[in-house]
Image (tube, rainbow, N blue to C red; front, side):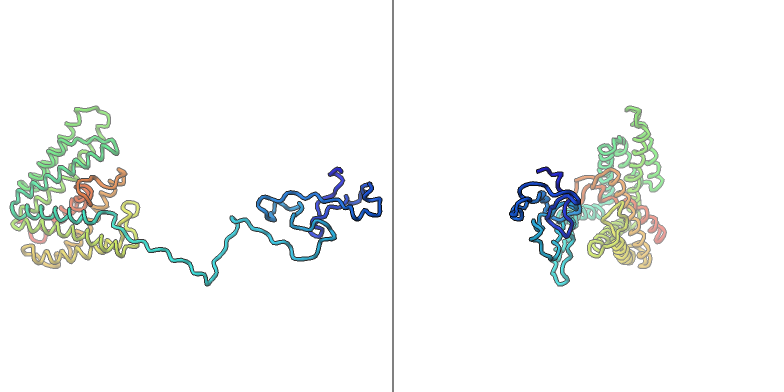
Amino acid sequence: MSDSSWGAPPTAGQAGYWGPTAGGPAPAGPAYDAPEAQHTRPMPIVPDAPAYGGDQDGDRGTARPSGALFQDEFRPGPPPARTVPAENQNPEPMPDAQQPAPAPQKKSAGRDLSAAIGVGIGLGVVIIASLFIEKAVFVGVVAVAVVVGLWELTSRLRERKGIRAPLVPLAVGGAAMVVAGYVRGAEGAWVAMALTALAALVWRMTESPEGYLRDVTAGVFAAFYVPFLATFVAMMLTAQDGPWRVLTFLLLTVVSDTGAYAVGWRFGRHKLAPRISPGKTREGLVGAVLFAMAAGALCMQFLIDDGSWWQGLLLGLAVAASATLGDLGESMIKRDLGIKDMGTLLPGHGGIMDRLDSLLPTAPVVWLLLVVFVGSA
């Protein structure tokens, strides 16, 4: 029997029945000529069911295997339910359904706190001992920190950017700069800075001229950023109460960083500079200001000769601002270099430069305000 003798698929009212072509003659044959024709009805052509088994839009116009196969077996009833694929389903939970609460995430400091505290205590003992036993020893400690910081900075510049800042003249000139600031004051520091920059320019001439301007510019920047700013710590030490001025400078910077960390870790919600340092928050900055101002009032009242508590409030505010800017400044450098820490010398802290980031820009601020408040003698 030819398929062309059959009409179009049945409509919704004739589900599953294939009849003769409309208007055409009935096919001849014994099944239609004999009286028993009603018992020899032909089987309909039923297409294969879709693999997903649902009544999809793409199946319109084809027979549904879920319908009645013969017309006299069709009974009126509700239309077959449509099966919606899983990807189109969007079940909503019942109003009274209990959703499991997500497990609270514990905040992490991001560093080994035990190692950081131990290293911090060790550094504090060395600094305080050298500060109050002999001033010259403390100047030596500052000079060593400057040389190590220069080594870390120039090493990262070479590794990450291919910048070859001359380390030897920077290290020698940096140590000399700190000593000159202690012996000759600001004038000696400026002269040593100029000679160090000149030495870096000459030293770099012994190598290929390619990248010369880039390398000497980085060298001058490193000389200013690390040893020159550190000379203000040595100049603070020259006063009669110099050790107490340096101790005030160190305490206020550490307290500012601690207040920012403690308040920001506990209450931080709003980012301070997400593109530079995502971990810093505005709440942490408020904590740094409050902690530093309180510590400044106490230090100026009890540690600095002729100091007053209100001067300490201003000093603490300035320290919190300069320490935060210094921390953000080095974070900007590290983000440009694509690194987290400048070094690994201090477990839990990173490198020496990671500890000097807030101290270096704060040193000239504290030196200047102390000179304004109580003089330089």
